[in-house]
Length: 275
Length: 316
View 1 (cartoon, rainbow over the protein chains, first blue to last red):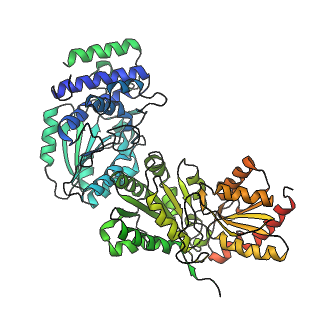
View 2: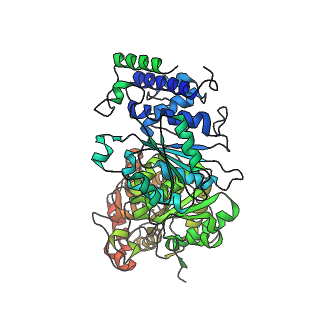
View 3: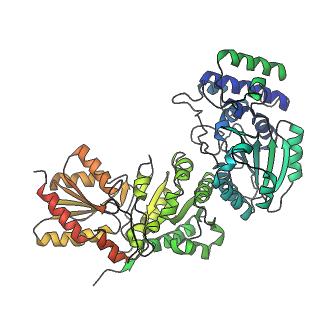
């Protein structure tokens, strides 16, 4: 399939299959956390971000920061399917010397705008980018996607103050609200709710959406509109392991490593559900 | 005539002004201590080019890294205790691993911070910063070399840490001397019987110690190792080949600083005894800078004793 042809659902299905394959081949990587953000990334990379796939470092591009670096298989698969680099690179993910490291690295991977790996740091990096870019004649936007569990990191809230204090209205934060973290449900481990109120209190414009429904995502961004001095946050409600039934219902929170059998089963499910 | 005394942090304010005038991409990030670090000097001329993120050192490092990703030439500064201490993991993940050319400027280093005491007297910043691959670590001895190192850092392709102090220190170099580069050192006094590798405030102490040693007929070579990482390898090895013994002097814990770096270098290339003058196994405390220097043994007389000991153990 050519990168520019196809529906968002078809792109998402292709990306999900690649994510399952690459983690299956690597026998390492965070599958369920990657699957939950596929639709958000497909929406961003096919519809929202201003990019040049043949010129990954184009100065005028919008920037994307993946706070939840462990979800990078989804980002890598999206970048490959958008032709930032050959899709073959996906199969050496996490191997010695690979272009696609276990967590995103700016210097190694075309299309990766910011480093990731240490949770809670994405928003601060996005703030710096937004500050640096906002004096351009045509102001690029900065999108940052974070997991919900990482909102427990203190530095995140330092950064949330900074976004509002510096009136970074060229910044959009997406929160992957799957409600799960390493050891269980976020609300059991360290409550995040009322999350919307927290962002409002910090001076943000806040919208919510279904992070697997493209219409809902588009509407949420449209509702945010031009924010006139406020950073924008979209809390995207997602399902951990989305698209693979036995991961969606996995009591271990999707931390299982896929054997060959379950990888085949996941791929068959995704074939059926997608195109 | 006693040398003019100026603090290295004052050089930071001046460097920012000169750099910002020459390069529109130069910006500074500060954690609400700009009047003390002197970053405020830039803010007074270009308020739009200094970002005060408040008391939030972790976010300060991330903001600086993000600005660098966005094409800015970034200097980020605070008291070293909090900049390097609290910001450490951000420096590791967001600056050092991606190799971003962020200039990290730690002021208020060492016991000469004075009355504030242990919490504010950073004695382990060199240890923490020099372990990173490709992190340039610089410790200027005076205002002139601080100004030059801070200005020259602007063209660095990787991250740089610059260690500055609060208290005024005597000028070692003549105004306008700009020959200070990463990996460099300066032989300030030639000698044949003991090598003294020093940095920061200990450089002028070492020069005084060399005078005393000369009167005892021990000829000391004094090298200002302002580039702690990478070290001025050739200057140090050339010197210890001639002298056969070495003293290091720094306002830092004995663990992890210049002394250990020099000892590791010479033990692998040309083993000679290395005696350290540094702070051993205790944190700082309140007191005047002069009292604290005396109490912690960061003085010319300690360098003299160490030199004599090293000389008696010298490689012949």
